[in-house]
Image 1 (spheres, rainbow, N blue to C red):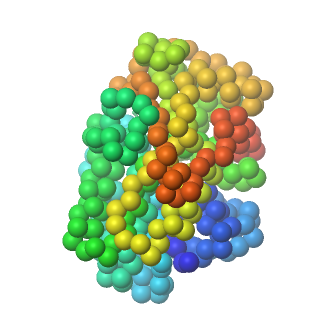
Image 2 (cartoon, protein in one colour):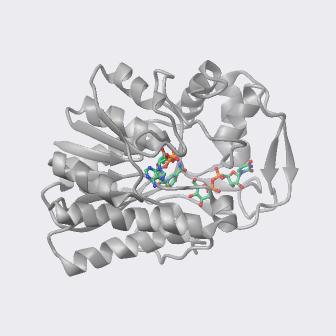
Image 3 (cartoon, rainbow, N blue to C red):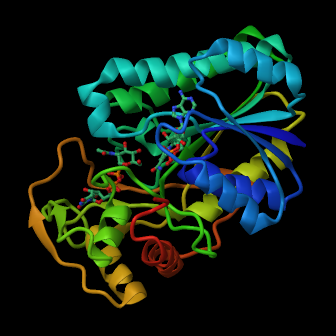
Length: 336
Ligand code: NAD
Ligand code: UD1
């Protein structure tokens, strides 16, 4: 199978490229490198001993996309490319709408013009808004509270409309919970620009001495220890979800939606403890106010992916922390 991976130089994309190549698939990556570096792809090739093709292309440039689809016959597209910082999306919403939504429309138009009709889209648990209960199944109502979340929700709806208009499309919506961890080799991992917004990269930068202390956003939530609970999933397990989706769904049609999570929630304090154990470092923290927009508890019911894709997670919280630490301690400055 020949797969086009948009945003393949990024965190989840690079780990997915490893799994695709290791499963014998041919990979072409496009990325504008706005939040990544080509170095990640060099390392993907080092890890796998296989080569992939890379083009620095922005999804906003339609003509380049058409040229790419003329040159290759793809079996499917995995669409990771997008901007993902929630806070930034509130500051510059139009940039998010243009990049994520217009970028996706351009991609789908190029796909339609060249008769490529299987797309696997990176959606997010953010589309469940504030769920009424946990665990969350795919049937839960959706909503969004910020421009980033709305781009995910709108794109899901656009892709569903596409299927309604033409039943030959094969749309796979993968709703990720909280991806963390890194490849075992320590050669690729998450390399956020500036101060990390998310918990795990923040903790690992405290552990490596790059940041002084973690702010724990609130300890008065209705959870076991008062701190927020999330479903952290190892990025390699997540990457494998994409391989399974392709194996099961290429050649089919329809709209297929799956939660990709472990089904187990951990609190912020539990993550701190697990990371201290994995790294042997003390994580300094203090309790601050809640972060606006945060919910108390969020974890997945991933039975559908287990049943229909034969996918399940294999890596627990200790491995997530150990692998994050391995990458971070080998690369205190990321890919720089
Ligand atoms: P990332 O920023 O590391 O990767 C995204 C990649 O897309 C980057 O390499 C970036 O340069 C590229 N890109 C952005 N806009 C582009 C454009 N217009 N044209 C070409 N390339 C472009 O992010 P990630 O964590 O790997 O996330 C991948 C996808 O998964 C994103 O769509 C994100 O919204 C989604 N997602 C991520 C998380 C998470 O916590 N990391 C959770 C849920 C969903
Ligand atoms: C955040 C985004 C969500 C996005 C997801 C993955 C917000 C409001 N939500 O989710 O839309 O899909 O990332 O990219 O930004 N925490 C701290 N201190 C920190 C950072 C986080 O205590 O410095 C806590 C949070 O309050 C939360 C947990 O750690 O309880 C996880 O936070 P984070 O990693 O940012 O993920 P989400 O909030 O789940």
